[in-house]
Length: 587
Image 1 (cartoon, rainbow, N blue to C red):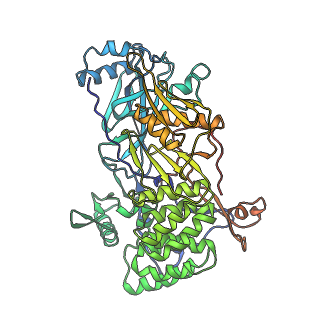
Image 2: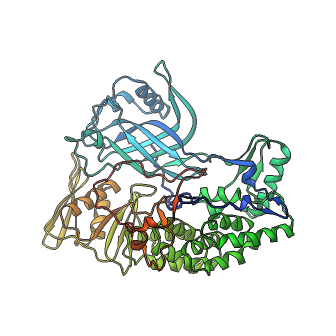
Image 3: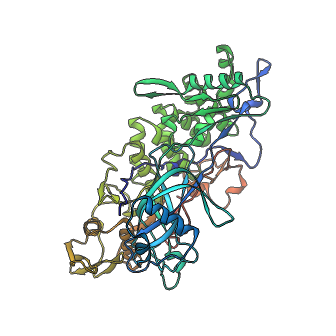
């Protein structure tokens, strides 16, 4: 039976998980749009006036897969369209006697779902959600491994047949089941799980602009592509090429510019802020107008986008913005400067990430997009702050900037996940993920488990103590027992679990048990990333930090809320795993 393993490509998203959309809606009064201003008696037309974005919603793809390596908790699936589809796939892979394999209690048929985010490229990873069909007799998926599954857009037809669309991805890997799910008390949760980064896109998703009715002609499509390419271009094997291509009179395809690869929403916003036709003199007039609007918090966000879209000629105006005392004006200006890769953006963005929860996710995303030593140093300094989401968000941003940076570089364990031990002056913290990429991050060296202890790491590995020494043992039917003796340092125990064949879900289970039993004193966090959609309160003179900015009386001031724009809003990962973990702060 051939189920090849796909080596997971480590990518962020972080900072997509860090990016989100940065279009902010005013709750207390409507911002005056620069688009409403006329220059020289006529309005400057932007790409967004004639186009709407295309490809901004996630695409759901599905497959019917097989989970193996279960400790007797699987089941033989009954007759159904899903079983028929799985048998067809197994025969395609020349699996011998597939019905016998399905009948084993070490296997289970599962339904697999993935979501392809906007702008995903061929080879990029994505998460998989796993569940057993409703009529399945499977007890639990803990300890299981999903073998390679082909993922498509599927539809179940009225005659109980499954219609398959084009192939979009492949997926495989160990299944992460909520460690607190008890099969005897909650079989539904025990039969659901995630494969972090286990999907691999086999084709790139199209991203583009659709011309609005009344503007759909070849001339408009061609000139829009031309002005976009004048502002944005990429180097492909040493050849410079524009990002836009007019496919027809209605559609312009966009390639993702490398600087915006982890923030597709902002990329589309900036592209749509490019002027369609503008003389040099009119551009200078518009820059002067935008500079005035940038210095007003109400209009700063849109002015910053247009100055970013202008490019180099907008830098001096943006630099005036970061010199202002207003936090919102400083942040908006710095964010735009970051995507223009200007060093001046680093310090105000680090300040925003540290003190303003509403700006934090966007500040970290912008810092990670820079190729600048000052941005790197700002992120490294944030690893020491008390806030869990700020320090882990900084870790993810720094890893995205350069995964080989000594401050965040880790080790790949057992071809399963990465372990990072971060030298930090902040309080000790353990962090693991349930989205994007499987990793364990230990903030602080020499984190230890108290003894005596008795823990489980999956269904086959146990952890016990003998004084200060820890015994990590593996017991499996038909196999010789194995044992490793290590210290009570958490990183040593994690390496021993993997050395005995343990997976990322096994390590997560052991860490959560240790915290629940009180033998892990360090703070334990899961997916402690800052979020979009928070409210920023204007008019809080002298506010030094997020506690003041989010106080109970803050509603007396003018507010700005991170809300939806035309692009896909940020999403939480696939749902309720680890919901009972200790709550994290937003400070």
